[in-house]
Length: 219
Image (cartoon, rainbow, N blue to C red; front, side):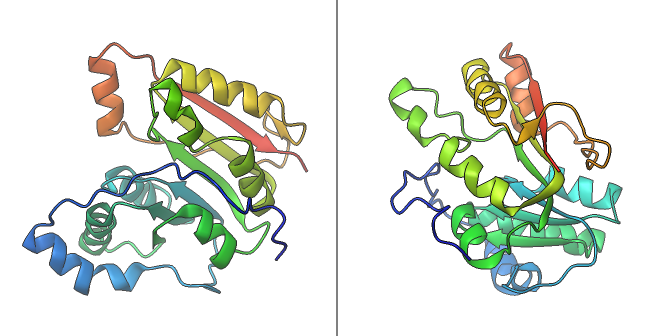
């Protein structure tokens, strides 16, 4: 795999939370999570959707139950969230989800082949609202290039946020990329329905406008 699509130095878009875990969370990390962890060269026989930053996993578990003929790869840096999703998958007996705990850029670089994704979901990422922190926002030019290299022709990128200036920046970024289209091509993958998340409901209460932005990679 070419190293050229990965910036040699980059600003991380996340800050790890080092809070205490409950005994149940610790047990899930030790005994449940390992069963669902993604490893390099994992082979799936269904369209693969990468979900970045799934939080506590309720939305992703819901999608997995609704779309059994789709395989999901959830990436998350919050260990209790990864453990909670694994517990939900076990409770619901869902086998179409793998979990990648850690930096999604390293996941893409080291464990996913190019042109392997049928879709990418980024729902309510950290908005880094202070202007001096905007450089830490996830969806920017360098990271978009990495994503595009791993998406199949016709794959979708679905972004959702309740932060207006972030949405405007993402809209402009995606519109500036000639490889992407806001209109689904004839063979483009349909986006998946998503449930409302806890962050989305919080934004609505605060009077924020929820915006979904969807583009497809040209064939």
